[in-house]
Image: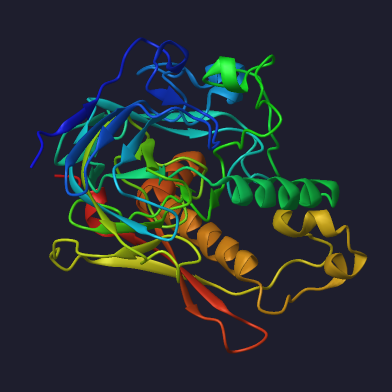
Length: 387
């Protein structure tokens, strides 16, 4: 067995690091080569490439360069991986940075119409808990995972994605199309780069992985990725110290980290895969007491949920009850949970929103009892220990 492969972080910014990129394209050069079964460690940057260091005030969010979002480490060539195979990525260890951040930015998150002001929550991190100096007693257990991880897209898949996302944008949907501003590496994806009009943004997950934000991808679990290019091109970043299912305010506890994985090529196993899959093997946790709020798709007359605004439908505005709308049900459950935390713990609403993003889970209870599907928003109570 070969020695572990370390893909090191170099330089203060992604633009200075030859092993870092923030756009997705088949032409990204490999940063290293590993064999099937070899251990790989990725040194990663936080999701905004260090633009909000510990203690930075909330108003600094207004100056963020969103072109720098999601600097990824890699990609790594996995010897023997071919299109039609699957790459099995088992998480061996995640070492957190000393600090992390949760952010609320106007126009981003699940409740954009309710939270209009910039806000930040700075966390101290260790391998046990995340804490906030201004909220004594709040402790969120470490449950770290890479928010973004995947392989390189193939040429044909890239073409399909570019076409469908352009069509969605033309129809009024929310899409971040290719943009050369602050693209890394600049010689490929910047304003003069040959692939500047083809380089995918990293915001959404896709068939090859990406910004999936699946908190089950913690140490012990295995992520299965269909391979689209020779060598696969494994990469990761955007590591979360902890996150609730839903990442509702738009960020989890974001941090830099060292992510160690073991990769195995499973021949021909990708042919039947339409996208990533997970073999969940998390360590059993002691049963935790929690509180959950339910939500169904009922709304005030005249209100159009943000996720349906692109329809510009008078009929949607006139309805008080939407049929089987998971998004509206989830929204109502989350608002109810925020209200409960404010009342129970005396929190500011925006702090409750950020805590929900870090620790509360949105779960689908049922989707069959039309018209009202039901979602719960659940939070563990032990994070509010005042001892």
